[in-house]
Length: 71
Image 1 (tube, rainbow, N blue to C red):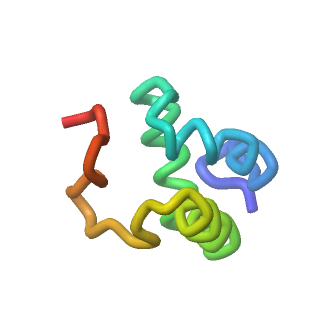
Image 2 (image 1 turned 120 degrees about the vertical axis):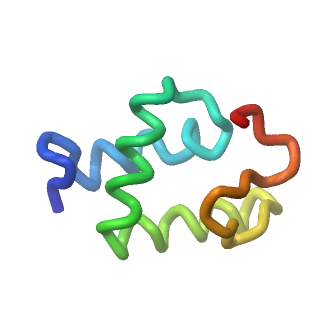
Image 3 (image 1 turned 30 degrees about the vertical axis):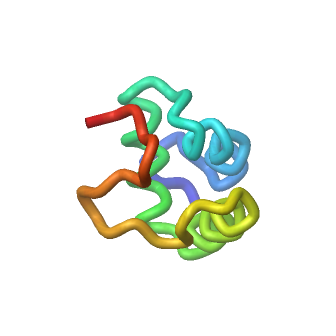
């Protein structure tokens, strides 16, 4: 899947760990989030990474996990 334009699953997967660690620029993080909302495969990979890291598998929209830097 390529969504938004230019953002493939492969490109997003490479950035998922940085996304979880809150290490992406705001624009990159928003683009990754937009792709994840549209792509079930990448959303599943994100859940697997969160479970492996001990974070909650699902965070309700608008909420950040404890310790998140963005506000």
